[in-house]
Length: 446
Image (cartoon, rainbow, N blue to C red; front, side, top):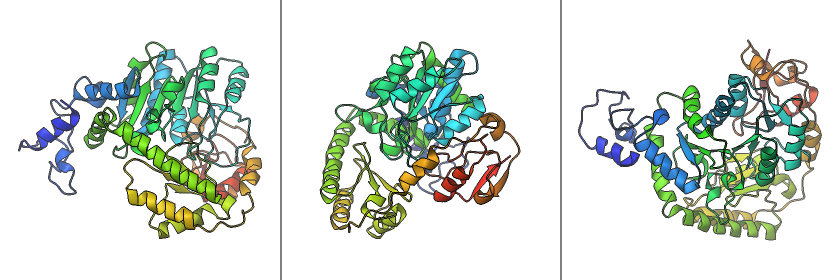
């Protein structure tokens, strides 16, 4: 029996609900009859041994991994669970290397697990906040430059702009040095299904965190924590206990039902639908190339327009798209990000084609991203650990008055939840300029 069939059977049983939630199945918004809790037969997410465990096994089969653990709190929970599992495996505090352009959930996990990250220095200039590309050479330099061994490397790929890291090369570097490779693949759950696969599991990653809801037909909050078949022995058994430590004791059964339905689709028609959508998106990318509209995404189902190179501020270009009845995923001064899936309607693709066919191509604007590369190359001075900063008393101050103060919380905007300044660092004049550039008006300081 699947999660979905169990819940539908329960919803149609006319049983008196003397359990949570308080709506008792009354259809106030529509989904309440299917919104249940851990009643008999429903299994339990973090101690799964019944219908949830069976659904997770079905998903693991679709991804070809040793184990998949469901998350009802997106990749944020998966990231914390992954790092917690490595901590339990080692039986001591761990050392983790990461690019600075990491998701806020990683920074929170560092505070909770008392990890002081080793920051990987990219070997090419970082020009935009969301860029997360890390080379195998940069990862090797970070690992080899430490007095003590690094236990794990944490990489974001694809990044918010759709750029892909050399996961295969980085995996080789990690495994040669005895480090576990964790990949935040939040934007790339679908990458298993194009041909050939671009998923980090197939590139040598040991642990992969997928936000299923970002690119697959899953409710917001649905995610996966995958453990590779080649990961260190014992790691797979430690993931659920670690997720329990960080996760809610009341996970949404609506989210889990959508993960369950997606598991069936992944063994059915969905992989073919994804490949068809990749081909359709490639046609739009080809049109953009013909018209000289720069797409800097390397993903098959993401389009990232470098707006400044065709004469626009990204936020203004996004407004033009909204006037054409299209809502982008993200826009900043440089780029507009569009995410596509097989569940976009034919009309959606037609609107995109019409928009890019008719878009006025202007003289390229001054490339402020190049100026930003000089700002991003600056490395703020560390004053205290991430944990000490995030768990200390703090106060908000306007960004323009923050120079010289110690950052208490990761200074970021949502989206993309990538920090401009890390907790524990002294806020520099360069950091203040980036805060203003990305419209972050205030920052918490010690």
